[in-house]
Picture 1 (tube, rainbow, N blue to C red):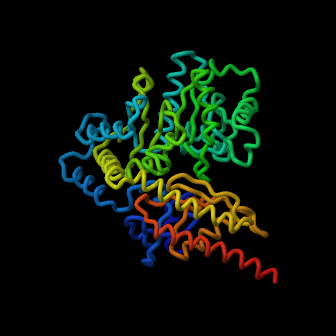
Picture 2: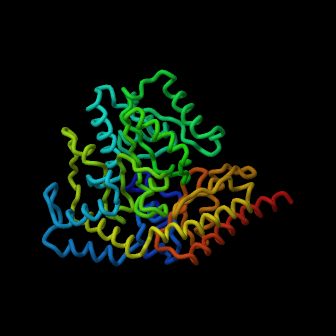
Picture 3: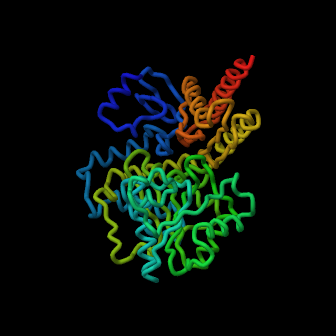
Length: 431
C-alpha cells in the first residue's frame, strides 16, 4: 500500500493524501473493493456523493444515452437533457419560493454564486447592504469567497486580507448552548457586532451550512426560529448550503425541511450528480433574475451532468430513498447512542439525522481525541468498514442510501469491537 501512495504522492500535492490509505479498485452499491480485493462497507459515499449507490445501473444507462447521442456539450445553449433536468429538479424541490435554478460544476461555485446573489440583492436596497453573516466552524468551499465565509481561520491565513463585510458568529454547539437559543443568538451577535450595529442597512445575507459537516451537528429548531425572525426584521436573505445534506441524505429531500422553513436560496452539489460534476443554486425569480449577475459557467448544464442529475432524482423516487434514509438513519443513530452510553470515557457525543451521523470522541488516557478517532477508523478498516476519518476528533458516517439494515448491524459491531480493543489495550497496560 505504501508503494501505491508513493506513486501518487510523486505527482500530487500532500492535500490529496487520505488519512486512511485506501486504493479503490471497484465500487458497487454500498461496497468498495481495494487493490487486494478486500470488500468493505463504504460509509463515505466518496464524501456524500454516491447517494444512489456506486455504479448505479440507472445512472450508467442515462449517461450512455448522452454518450450515444450526437451531443456532448453545448455551453450556454439549450439542449434536451438540460430542459428535462431543470424541470425535474424544480418539481423535486417542490417549493413555490424556490422556482429557478442556475447549474454549475462544483459546490464551491454554488456558494460563490449565492454570495454574489445575496450582495447584489442587498445593494439594490442600499449600497452599504453587502454584509454576510456565517458561522464559526462552518465550511463552504475552497475558492476565495467560499473560504472567507467558512469559519476556519487557519484555512484563510494565506489570503493576506479579510473581507471586512463577512462576519462570523458562534455556532450553537450543545456544549456552548447553556442559555436558551434566543439568548445565545443575541449574545453571539453582540459579541461580533456590538449593541448598536445597523443590520437592516448593512447585512445582505446569512450563509448557513445545513449542519456542521465535521460533526453532523444540526441547529436546534428554536435557534433557527430566532435567526429567521432576525432576518425578516432586517430584510436579510437566508442561504442554506445543502452540499452534504441534499437529495435524501438526512431523511428529507433537503435538510431545511427539518427546520420547518424555506430558505431564500439553497446551494446543492455532491449527491446531486452522483459522481458527475454538478452543482446548483436554487432560488426565486426575484432573487435570480438580477441584472449584472453574470451567472455563467463553461460547463453549466452540460448534457452529461444533466443526465446524471435526472438519474439521481429518478432513483430517489423509485427506490423511496427519502424514507429509507430516515428509517435506517434512526436505527443507526440509536446504535451509535448505545455505543456512547457503553463507552462514556471514549465517546462524548453522537449526532445525526437520516444517513449522516457522527461520533465526537473524547481524550482517552494519554491519547488525544483526534488520535482516538484515528484508532477507531483504522481498526474498522481492518474489519471491512471504511469510515470518514475527518482528521480531527470526529468520525463521520455517510453510506450510500441503498445500504441495508444487516450492513448497518455488522458495522455497529465492528465499531464496538474497535472501541473494546482500545479500552482493553489501555486497561492491560494498567495491570
